[in-house]
Length: 171
Image (cartoon, rainbow, N blue to C red):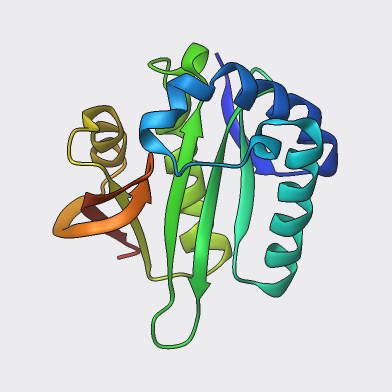
């Protein structure tokens, strides 16, 4: 299997809408509560347009994760800040079918290299729910180190939930 990442495109809306609709229950424990439209092709079209605008502003790098050329998830470098901070946050998901086959691990590695080599960032941060051991393994395999614990950090599945914080530095 060949895993890769590439910039998101408007043409990805149909595949992402289908993936999200089929994987809604799989992703629900790890995601914010989303409006019904998010799980549709039109909703994904709007999400992609917004992500492309943020990419043009330099505050986000929205990517899709592919396996053998087929989109299986998303990965984003969010909240890109240059200057003295030179940092971004990383967020990602893969479909249930792609889980456990190395797609997320490969995507995190590729996106992190992009953050350092292409964007010139110093630091990439990621947070996981404390019980999301799979995601923590993905980060560890890519050289991320745990550096903190954030109580009630993000509203996930309708609840303010604690997160374990990880980071990787360019050097």
